[in-house]
Image (cartoon, rainbow over all chains, first blue to last red; front, side, top):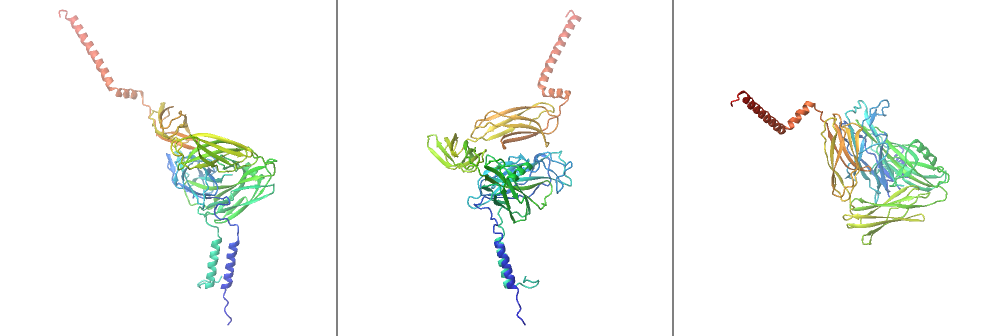
Length: 183
Length: 433
């Protein structure tokens, strides 16, 4: 009876080859932000959903939205909306309603609420497609090893008694967090 | 594969799998702590000619969802803090394409994947232009739908890479210091800002130095400002923090800089009210009276201000009247009281026109740029205007003592007159008496 040939060496060689290729390719895989070269990384905050919004002058405050910013140069953060006047608009789930959409009467308001867990005085400003400065001239977060700066933002939506419920649809707005380093 | 269902893998195969797993673990992209969109390099400063390939920009998805990323180049300006100012309107993106050809223009990146974006320099917008400034903007949104319901705020991230392109031509470096200011930083830090303008045809990184002198003429601080790029035609504020504790007193600060061959300086005087403590105003609205007018009746509102800080302030704000929960201001009255000294209190009285019955919100707000210094809101409902009879009855009810006195006086007059008349009548009827 001929000796049974084991497939193990062949498999081992194959797997090692795959591992080697994986180690060597792609060689330019970027590391996380370090001292050089200049780099910037910003995390996505989760989608923010209010559920039920109540009418009243005090408005509805959303839970704090956190962004983590890592930058090895001085940096700034701006916020803007996709809708010019910052008012949440009826959304079908795939797109804004085009024909006579329901639009909330008041714009969504934003405020910087914390920097690295240090509370900042609330100062709500209406959101619009013109970028509003959240922070500017912030120092590098990589003085030695890089650590992300934790930036908290809060949103407030005032609902009027004239605002209609969205019915089967939802109200929606897209918020753009624009992070950049100085020239 | 040596592994079959129901059988154990051989020892060598298991070893191979372990090695492979280690290899793959080593080669997978490191998961950044923040887990989002990563871009590097975020600044490229190169000499180019039309057709020059620029170093590629690496963009990586460190988030847990697939990202759709739009890539676009656009001409950029610079704000005072040095951040790029640009827009991604169609004309701007068209102008960006003439300066820089970017490829690819759209990316779809699975979690942990990265891509390189290549760029080729085009012609400068104007013939003979030496410095051309642009950004490559990466606008990313998550593809998977979230399971949130109700009113939704969906986030999008935009990161930019700044491009400083120098075309062949005669370089002219020029500029000057235009201002020096100081503001209170965190934790007893004084933050000085040197404003420097570039008037040449290419960006500069001007060296700038700060010297602070005490009232006795002794140099107490000497340090350099952070040297940063200033684009031609723009001004930029370069910061430097002074953490050395300076005692209360008067000081003199001087900024010295050199841009190209031109030297310039700016000087300011400032006062500290404590160790590294600038006189800082703190405006408070101590009270905003809730008005109680009748419907349609003009009314006054009293607003009490207090400067609780250590420096003077000339506040600017407005009193706005809106229907509660509705958009649009019914009236807006600018508030510009004269300067309040440290510790000073002041009452403002503001007259407003009458409003119909309903619920109204009155907001007093003082701001400095986008920063709100003080704000207070009250909600009120004007009463319905009573009828004439009700108002007369109300007046009478409110003046009972006066009415009683008047009634008593009238009664006295009537009784006295009646008695006099009776006496006169008796005399005429009974002449013997």
